[in-house]
Picture 1 (cartoon, rainbow, N blue to C red):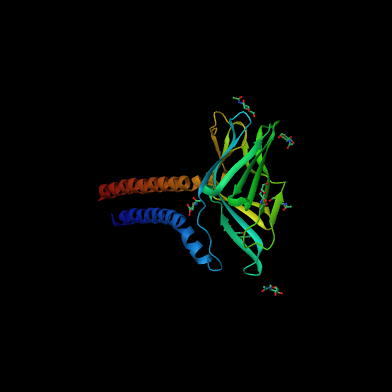
Picture 2: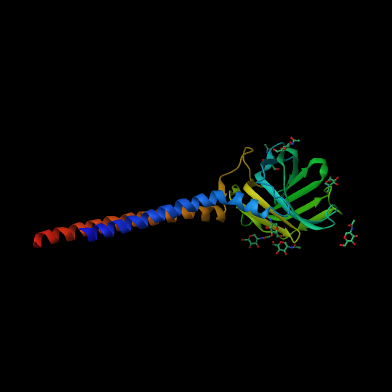
Length: 252
Ligand SMILES: *[C@@H]1O[C@H](CO)[C@@H](O)[C@H](O)[C@H]1NC(C)=O
Ligand SMILES: *[C@@H]1O[C@H](CO)[C@@H](O)[C@H](O)[C@H]1NC(C)=O
Ligand SMILES: *[C@@H]1O[C@H](CO)[C@@H](O)[C@H](O)[C@H]1NC(C)=O
Ligand SMILES: *[C@@H]1O[C@H](CO)[C@@H](O)[C@H](O)[C@H]1NC(C)=O
Ligand SMILES: *[C@@H]1O[C@H](CO)[C@@H](O)[C@H](O)[C@H]1NC(C)=O
Ligand SMILES: *[C@@H]1O[C@H](CO)[C@@H](O)[C@H](O)[C@H]1NC(C)=O
Ligand SMILES: *[C@@H]1O[C@H](CO)[C@@H](O)[C@H](O)[C@H]1NC(C)=O
């Protein structure tokens, strides 16, 4: 009996350890960002998560032809007047002081975001392939003139391939994503949902989730499957143990 009890408690121990590991993993996943932000903030302070903005582009007939909902963070390298050297700065785009405009054509669409007093002009260009009915973010341009900049900043990349979606669907990514635009500019996106083509009734179409989100959902599924497997093993060990002990009693 004690041997069987040993097997059972060992299995239970492993199960508990796994549950604990899963809980801790979840805990760290949610707790980690603030702590790392605090430790790496030493040189110059990092902003928190950017606020989510909702941006529209309206076509000539008054219907919304491009819709985007996202938090944006610029990671930009420029020469600073106050520090007299090249610095790297991470700046959130504040939706309440950002104005959107843009244009929509059959195979291209643009979203232009201008912040207060036109100090920052950020433009996203989307392309639609009418053969495959797929769209993507193909170009980003940024011009900025912030108070601490020695000279106006400008960056443009016309050969990007981000935020890939299908005509009639919106592209969605809950996870943070980095769009590398140029050596001195990258853009971090948070909770993006965007649809540059084929909107119906000023609304997002069904969402196509990005790979990052799908990977993130895999973890709970794997943990769940592992736990189910362990429960099965414990149950089997118990049943086998019971059978063996029955046999033992019969021989006595
Ligand atoms: C408005 O124009 C877009 C193209 O720019 C077209 O797809 C849409 O059907 C038009 N809507 C109306 C109500 O005319
Ligand atoms: C900004 O970009 C640099 C590399 O260019 C990278 O090392 C750094 O982690 C980025 N910071 C953020 C907050 O994305
Ligand atoms: C800025 O730095 C350069 C060399 O890096 C130096 O020659 C110049 O005097 C500095 N200017 C100021 C205002 O400190
Ligand atoms: C915009 O929002 C930020 C943070 O939510 C706030 O600090 C700022 O005062 C707001 N600015 C305006 C012009 O409303
Ligand atoms: C559009 O998609 C088709 C099919 O995937 C591809 O063969 C073609 O090269 C694409 N066109 C452009 C302009 O990318
Ligand atoms: C942003 O665009 C506006 C209008 O085209 C322009 O007047 C302004 O100078 C631009 N700002 C920067 C920093 O380039
Ligand atoms: C444009 O972006 C692509 C993909 O991030 C990169 O490979 C390429 O070097 C960039 N081009 C320029 C001019 O920065």
